[in-house]
Length: 111
Image (cartoon, rainbow, N blue to C red):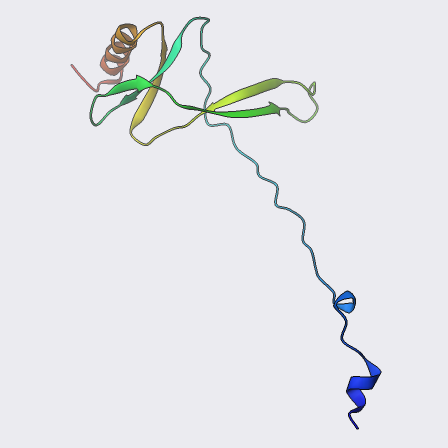
């Protein structure tokens, strides 16, 4: 006769499952653009020179600091950043090109 089979019957309820805590995702704010009312955020690709409207993701979060008022800043959308691209807030695409040329001259990218 098998002694182990009679002493401890195998039941699904008796199994122990270890459940870990969900990982909390923290994002570090890289930079911010203060967009004026009526302006659009344009994305300029530095390799091709192509200018398009920036793409956004809906986020809805609140940024807070320890020891400061709880509602320090609210973010409702986040820009999808791409490599070798810069972002300029401007009234229209022509204005964005002018701002880019001005900043590129200041930075020494173009003469």
